[in-house]
Length: 273
Image (cartoon, rainbow, N blue to C red; front, side, top):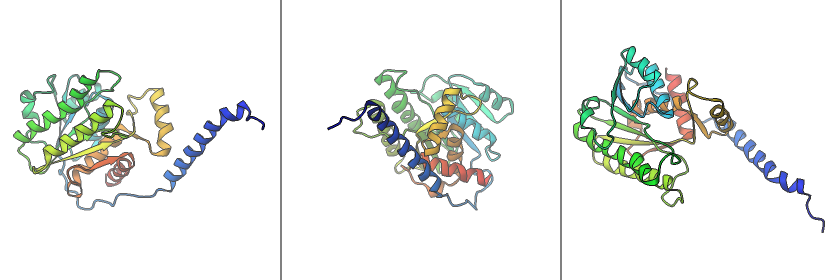
């Protein structure tokens, strides 16, 4: 029996990848599902929010979306450092920036979130940057402690916490970061049970930075994954969070939005604007 040529052996995985990729592109093009238009949005229904992690990739996009929203009057940015976008928001009077370093103790910044309707949490780092223990503290302990303190001091009804998690996570994963993302979700959902708070988890695939922040490599990755709905822009996450906040009654504590849902709610937000 004649053995396959080396060229065939090497090309087969590439051909199969191209076939599956094209199948994903076609499936995406044929998927015409949309979010029903929101007809009863009240002006000012998402007037005061807080953003954690606005100096990072996702947080910068969330802040960009919030700054562009005419209904958002006040944005409390709790951050370790300022960025050009944060400083521009402060200059135009829409952003109140508070520098904060102790993310296991929020007593010094409680006044910044007593009256906010929604908190958009984008604080985090890659598992490649820190050890497992530090990763757990940042991605589980930080948000859990915040929610505990927020529930004690909030003066608003029907508040919501919007948590950026990740796709492809499970409690059985071999990856520590993936298990910890699930643990963070479960602990946050549990804290909100029986309270006026709803916790919504966002599970995007690749997050493309804003146009101002993206470098060539990030742009190439985004345009590779976008045709198969495996990528979102950071600003689209912010638009989705704003849309979900306005549509509060349509969501319940513990809901999770993947990349496709994020894209659909971002489209709904843009159509409504």
